[in-house]
Length: 282
Image (cartoon, rainbow, N blue to C red; front, side, top):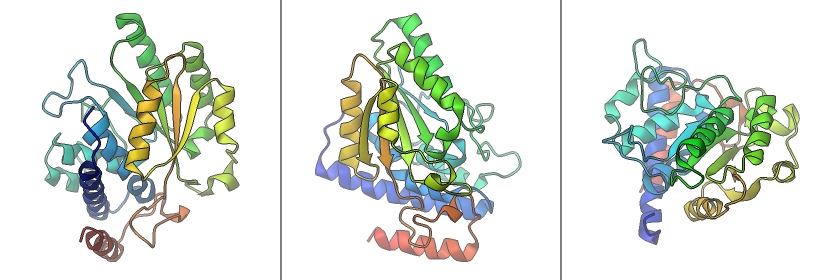
């Protein structure tokens, strides 16, 4: 892993803001999509694709790469924007989001982008897929293969029972190279998570399933990277990082508003959002 300097942190902060600009532009062009979660996860995706992950945009199916599984596929605008900024495909392609014939479907689809690790859409499936990959890696290459597996979950997704079956299996198999990142933004489609289906005490629930648990600020690059390093140092169990994030991060009229979970962005709203984000760059 590269050395984490103040200069690198500053660079990643600027890159995350550029990714947020791309998210607004592509969602406005599409006329549909999920802005709040995508904007809120820009810092975490930037940290992964520009610092943490072992990957190669020029050789996306490289066998030794780390795997990142996006379970909550509706926030794919942040994944696509990060891919483009990292060099997987041209930035211009982002404007094709959700259009007929586009590779950038409304939920990630490996039939169109074969370097995606999974196709995702139905919530609750990604962790089971990640656990399966880890178990296969353990069978094929032994306990310490050198490859890391990461799974992004939304907090509202934890309402799905399939998640907790995968949590139990991962702990049973002591999948030490599996790290889950929960986007703890406290919103979901129809309201705030604690009104829909209370999740707290979330840390204690994961600990009860014998996972190593950390809680961080999901917008602090040093906290994100240090939490991943600590998770990788745990050798007897899987790890989960509960990342407190602000939905709609960077756009004041979207921040912490559950209504923006899946609300289309009008041209007028896009103009206001882009003005805020571009002013933040200065």
